[in-house]
Image 1 (cartoon, rainbow, N blue to C red):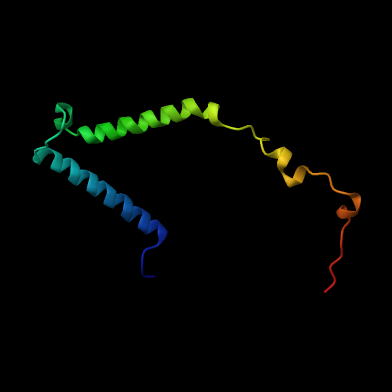
Image 2: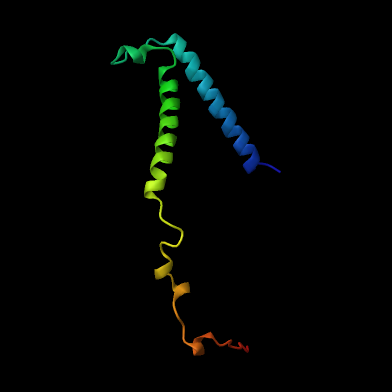
Length: 97
């Protein structure tokens, strides 16, 4: 079998991302940065900033979730399954071909 299967493609993508992260981390040691703030010139600042920002996003989502969630039967009064049907509509029909 030739070509990439989804399992092989997933492994390839993970290794590619690991290689990119390692290369960018190595470049962080060699390149001189010109940040607008002194904190931006610190070692692996952008990696730590991204990690902490993603943690903060998850925490904020957990805080706001109860405020924004709807109840399970929020749409139930408007659903067609909850409508009353005449008894004639509920009879079983035969389909002869």
